[in-house]
Image 1 (cartoon, one colour):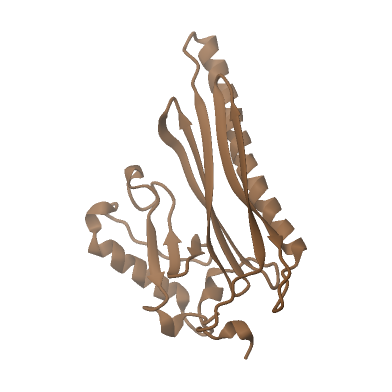
Image 2 (spheres, helix red, strand yellow):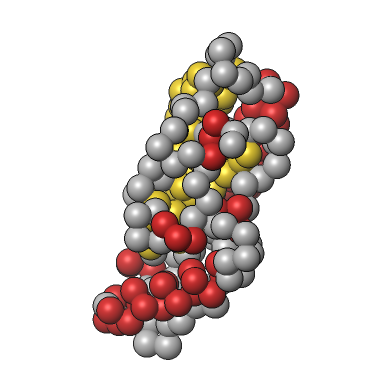
Amino acid sequence: MRYYERADKCLYNPIHVKFNEEVSIGSDFSSSLQYPSFFALRNSFFNVNQNILNNINSIIYSDVFTFKNGVIDEEIQVNADNNASGQPSAKYRVVTNYANTFNKNNILSTIVSLMAFVNNEGPKYNELNNYNFDLLTGNKFTIGSVFNPNVDYLKVITNYINYKINQTKELYYEDATVDISDDQAFYLTDDGIVIYFGIDEIAPKEFGIPRFTMEYKTFAPYINPR
């Protein structure tokens, strides 16, 4: 039995998490960007390949700045139109932040929130990116990897989410039902698997990002002990 396969043996990944923050202030566009980067530490049990962490760092960095640059392009176009028509300039602001939600047993799960506001209203854009990686291989840790082999995990998740929606139907769209697929957005925490949906996908925009936690202790027979 490999050391990470026992449920009572949780080993923290020997990595350092660097907090990055970049702030810019302009007349029509400002931003406050917070995002992580990861660096390997030496450990007597195992070492994480820095090349794997560099790839994760690159993906997160690219996503954060692609989002920022996309909003900049929109601000430039909108204010060009406003100036041409004599309208006041729109004030855009981008804010990103993150949380490292699971960092054990060679599994890393991180989320990055991407938001954009216009004239202090909104947010106009509100996205949540997830980064789930197997640090042994460098591959993405898929939702199927969370479950034991031969478990119909898509059915298990679908039934649970629809059950939770039916418990509080008033919070969701009248015809809201889900049919989970392998590309479903999720992240891991110490307590369970968090399944989440986009803004305005199954509930009104005012609801925010709908999240459902499948606790490990409740779904233990289905869950990979790792």
